[in-house]
Length: 310
Image 1 (cartoon, rainbow, N blue to C red):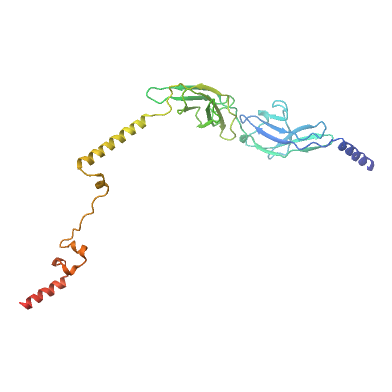
Image 2 (image 1 turned 90 degrees about the vertical axis):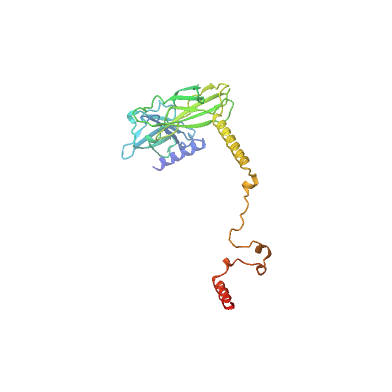
């Protein structure tokens, strides 16, 4: 036993001196389903330790004890595993691990927990068409139309898709993005005449991720394409002019100046028997006060004095 252990340690030391080591830890990069019926997982290998290294993907479903190996390493390309319809189950958690092995040892990735229903990333929309519409007595617009991805079944309600549209003049750097909801068409009104526009669409299911942007389509906007609807502004300008004219005529006919309208005169005192001159002099003893303003007691005393004198 001692001799066997010594030989193993000697072999390991020689291998390490030659730059050989167990493989590095692989990393699961992504798992994606295009249609809820199949899916693929990709991984990134670690270092190979200077030796030929084999990789395998194993998985088990939540609640099950059996562990399975990847059913198809070929269909989706290198460092990938494809799960056909036979091996795909929705509303079940998959626990996935990638293992790396060479003659110096092995390593495993961190486990990845996925539910197929939440890793859906569909293909982009198809058959994008562009058309400039110029209806009579209405503002012209660019009509953008498309179809859902061919592998997606939206008619039966199995998928609910949402869409985004983006467009820009060919010479521009930034895209203008519009959310289109669940409809498969979109109208754009504000465009620059005489410019060529690039248009793309993408889609997203009710659970999952946005697809990649689809193929570009382009269209030339006619030079006579109006950029703004001026009818409303003309109406507002005419109405404002009419209102101002009516106000000027009303003021002129009544003979009021603008200052009189803005600052009307303060009315004088309206109390009967009140002498306004008292306010100016401040000497009430020099002026007579209307007896109507006298207190009832004083009037009575004055009347009694008059009777005694008589």
